[in-house]
Image (tube, rainbow, N blue to C red):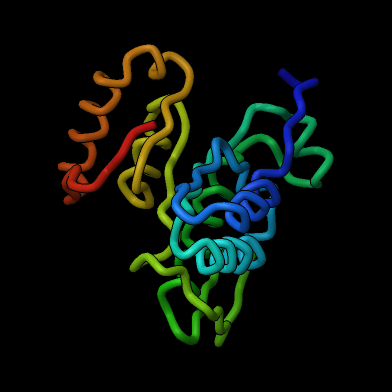
Length: 179
């Protein structure tokens, strides 16, 4: 609940990555729209490199309106900035001199080094109830799915929905994971 001890996931992962050599790390859930995406891309790349490629990131839109308000980010339509963040992060992970343009952010010739160790960048796990927006986000960005809401009670059915959408989107389920 809202009064839980919610430690910052990137700080915790950084600490544990320094103390371990084989543990794989996955956030559950990083509310990416509340962070500046270019800075987040650099933080994630750094943690991935320092952990020797043991980082996966679970992202979602969150549920707490007050958290958005405290960060000056609009709560309604919060999926759009999540999509933008995911696309923006993948751009400098992939491109040497990255360029990106959207309604909110525009840049050219950004160099992010070192790059994450996995081809394409840090694996992104998408969390959420499988509505059309979450399914679209999974097909476009997802390496995995973290079930949420009613779909958490039927993960097998959820994976069937995801497989159907992946097929429509020209992706197969090879390597796709669920938490």
